[in-house]
Length: 91
Image 1 (tube, rainbow, N blue to C red):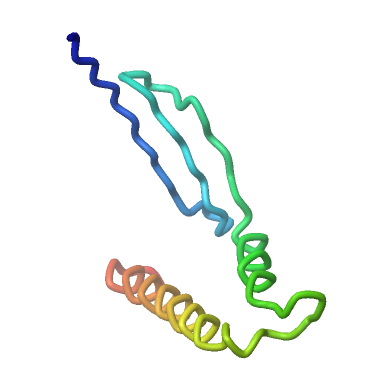
Image 2 (image 1 turned 90 degrees about the vertical axis):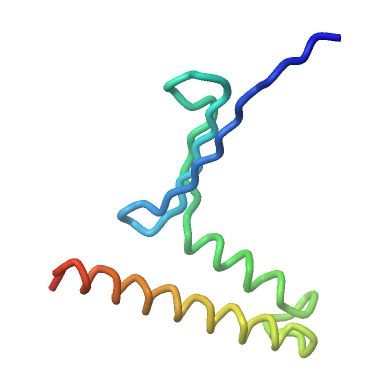
């Protein structure tokens, strides 16, 4: 039996606009086979909507811990980003 190895590289980035860019490379190609941006705000809206009670605009009680955890993680990410750019001398 012949063994075939196929390299697949998924490369996510945060753009200067705060969107998420995802590029997928297959094999040794220099150009991605898939390259698209995903709006961070749209992703946040989708996450929030997934925590709502069906047919309402209220966070379900059983998702309150999830929302709290996500808010904490996002605040930490912004704090960490600010700290890192300050460390390299950005004002």
